[in-house]
Image 1: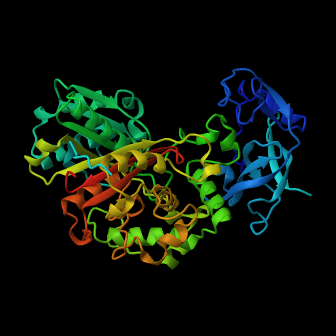
Image 2 (image 1 turned 45 degrees about the horizontal axis):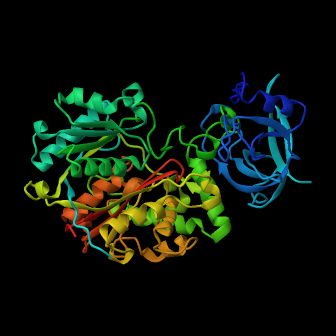
Image 3 (image 1 turned 90 degrees about the horizontal axis):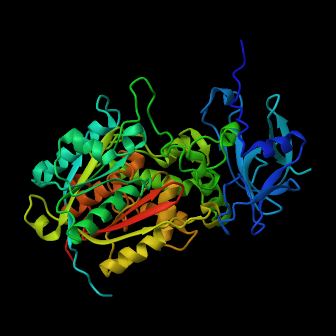
Length: 136
Length: 394
């Protein structure tokens, strides 16, 4: 029986630099050229200064769990074998919040404020997903 | 505060069959709801000159000019006001404000405001599911397919993040959220139209319901319903000459805070309340009952905080002990709300508010129905509408 695969994100022009960085094990976010505000996901313009110019910049990959939930509902068959899994908003040390998964962490361990660090998971020949694990 | 006499009122209410009702399209439910509201008010279709529509998720392409679709479906002629509006769960309140403003400005006389949706299909298992679609994911709206790759589907999780953070900051518990689910279910027992009528709920049954997006159980999440709900807004003077007791629009306001609700854990209620209470010239202690938008139990908790019934963070203890349940000091969601009656976005609380102010609540009628506070909330605490519905014009 062929395994049902999870949805693989399209490498859109907006997200291409993010995926390219993840492939080389680097987490990047956008930095506004107008006011230096860091942001993720990418946006067309800065919500603070309205500048349309931005560049991708590496971040250290450490942060803490700002909030999370355990997803028990199977919305896509590719996740049927993984529920419950942890979806979290991680506050990076540099400031921005990113939505991701926390992996390698038990139900009892995971809590708001927990220190985490980025880890990378190759999900296809071209796509790598940054995820987070308890900081070691 | 200066008392302002209400110049407009709700004069008609139409609620179609609700829930697992199959057959009519979303537009079909809208037409039926408007027809019922006209019948309820005693107005003729030819007397309608305004039509505002909030298309639900299943409208598809018809949503783009949703009010024209309903106009053509009903054969309405010579309208003077028409629009499709979408602020998620705040749309219903916003439509009524728009109608009231147009009537006061002389742009229209009798305006129908309607929400409808038909997302449930016969072969698809029903029950509490995601309420809000994919277009309202707040701070994460531009992430393409990335969220799906992380298994972050739907709106349940986005509200679960808020609830988890609220639990962390303020010590809120599932007992607190459960108290809201139990109270609303108790109210639903007095509402024959409620999808959960005849099915009371205990706190331990709440805890035993399956996790969806933990800390949300299934019973923290609203229903999904097919159906339509319409009201007719007209001048206060004209409402007094019609069939039903007028429900006066004493106060109205909107609040759309922007930013990231995960940081503030707040809705737009405080902003909207300032306009609405200022307009009505009343204070929170004048409110006799509440109909609060309840896409989730947690939304009720936060909304109570943001209106100032308790301090920020104290919503959990506030709802304990049956304060909002039948017989409690602050009746909240007296028809069972969207958790236990039916899910018509912001029209669910408005419809119940109208029923209560008229005194037509039957077994669930609140003893004091002078002033109802009604809220609508859209997106992820993104948009908010407040109505103060009065039995008296001032």
